[in-house]
Image (tube, rainbow, N blue to C red; front, side, top):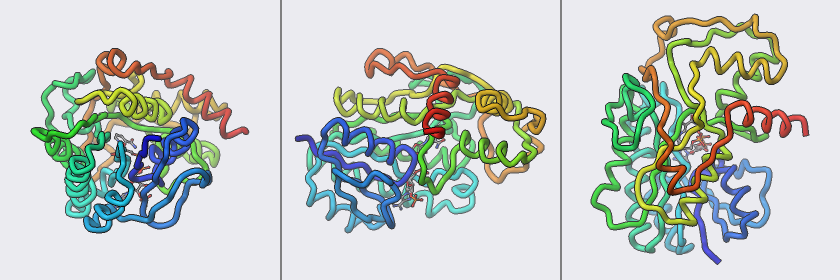
Length: 299
Ligand SMILES: NC(=O)c1ccc[n+]([C@@H]2O[C@H](COP(=O)([O-])OP(=O)(O)OC[C@H]3O[C@@H](n4cnc5c(N)ncnc54)[C@H](OP(=O)(O)O)[C@@H]3O)[C@@H](O)[C@H]2O)c1
């Protein structure tokens, strides 16, 4: 039975992967810091590991001797990364170095997740070989992590993704859809930017891309998102309409009025044709994904 390590198993993607992999009968090892936040805690082994502790991380991986490692851990708060660059590098870059070395030692396939924020947002609809130019530290840290894979002999897949959303009952970090639903439920007035365009990614689709990468061992870089391009104001309106909330609380503003510490790219969005071909990637539309979430929340 193939042994799979999921790093960052307390996060949105990490928890989703654990739940999917155990159903597929893999021998699953979850690594995250602190207590296990996944409410489903049967049929896999949980290890409390801060991945910035190189010796501890290497020791746990050496004991497991995995066939595949999926790295879903990162410091993901873009504004926090801007002001905590060393901490961001320790997780988003240095720990990835350790994972590459461990994958090399155990001949394990390594799946790593990167971001649309490696681009400057001037063009949009990015292909894998388009020129990168991050505008903020989070994007730069992820680009540094991608570059670590250049000239490594290990079998690996890098999946870049965009604005990941989904529902799980016990998340520390919210995501755009859950954050909006919370505000809308409480009738909190919302200002949403109308000049940042994205193709949001349903976490179940991202997990499917990880599993396909694991099964096909495709080597290289892939773009993973939905095909629905929208600005953040339109995204909020779609969420409100799907969940039958009043749209009058939502106002559109330009980014310049937000005054955030980190710059954001204006237009991202991916050309996902390479992933469709090699990984059989077939994402839901944004609306279809929202209806799935609605069903899960009402269950
Ligand atoms: N979310 C997005 O919109 C988005 C967009 C593009 C790319 N991505 C990438 O997609 C991947 C998965 O993101 P996600 O949305 O699932 O993020 P998430 O929910 O924030 O999960 C990230 C996990 O990493 C863990 N982590 C951070 N530092 C750690 C450390 N030192 N040791 C162990 N674990 C640590 C966090 O632990 P704690 O729970 O303890 O904080 C968290 O559970 C990441 O690589 C992210 O950069 C995400």
